[in-house]
Image (cartoon, rainbow, N blue to C red; front, side, top):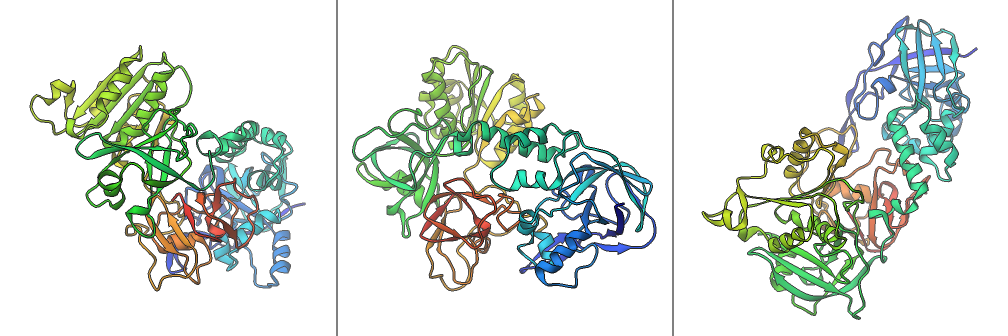
Length: 578
């Protein structure tokens, strides 16, 4: 009969780690006597990162004494005590290979249901001083599991564990863990997993995404299609056309005169611009042209302190060569018949203008709303082009807002005075069944999404484009509002040059750094990670050019053209889309 060996609790605390501070509840210690188990937690226990731990679906974490014995032998350690793997309940029995999702157990007065395996997390490795542990828990099929509380009650060491129900499908904890983190997934097991009501919503969502990718492998690539070419290729500047006081369009063609591959409406080009500095800076710009024009057009705003934008808008001339990575990005126009909202501010109109081109080229019968905000007509590039495209669509409407126009300019442009705000957007009477595509400053996109949600639009139908670095995911770290990205402190490295394209940083890989993630952190480039051992794929990053090697092979290799930066090092000069 399985039994409860120890009940372990601990409140979150700040712990120093690699020169930073982590707020974590992974330090658990045994308690004596009966302890009350409640729907969301055990009395005296807490979690530091509630996004990844705790809550109804992850109220109690279980780990087995058999796995303790395994790790003692594997690491050659005799200092591993109950609670050291961050678990609340140390048990004898309940193997990960035997317990199934949805199984139910009675322990003492309480009843539980198994909901998911342990989430891979660097903090369990931090707790034991074994950084590779998150990957080892998966590869050795010993993750442990979470349970939700069906009936509250007291539990204590020595209680018998009685199975009172079986899950609807025989999908073990170890099999579930392998489905998410290991390669060669069985589609039948994926379909079984999403049919189990007890499986936590987060894991169900991940398995649905894997099923969609298995059904349509192309969705794994940026924008739903394979890259048109690898690395960078030279494109020739055909024309440079001023569009407004501050914006110029640069038309790019193949040097041999052949048609360039089609892009998807809304995608962007990443350019390496040798004439703007050394090493050649790298920047990304939306394509503003029709997707299948045979050439590419980017429309660039001259920023006051922008070295690259200044070069492209004032110095580059027809005939110049620029290096370009293939069009990429998943901010793309989707098919369908429902209304489309194209909402932008300032130079953010460029990707939605490409979408407007695609809609006009197909003579779309969809209802199309063009909503744009600018300071005035002098800062409103490509306005006539957008209006002509809208005229070609049978069910279109245009709303332009000028925040600082001169008297008379509003009527000539058929614009409304004032900023494009939440109230003004709601007042337009936007259809609730629309799909929205939003581009502009980050604060603008946040406000627009809030307004659209208030107007009844499904938040999942609001898509936005962000050209700067993506928001960080650094679970548990405190005080993460760092400075702007910069080169790392100390003497320059001697390794290959690493370019963080979104952050505008190029630097030699420093001696003594173990991974690209560590370099990015030293540069204060916003980073995304969780396990730090090549398991969870949170850190997966598009690799625009160059070659990498792994300090330890990932359990499930990323797709071609991607890198797991937490365990990758540069083999050559490379460019990362971060």
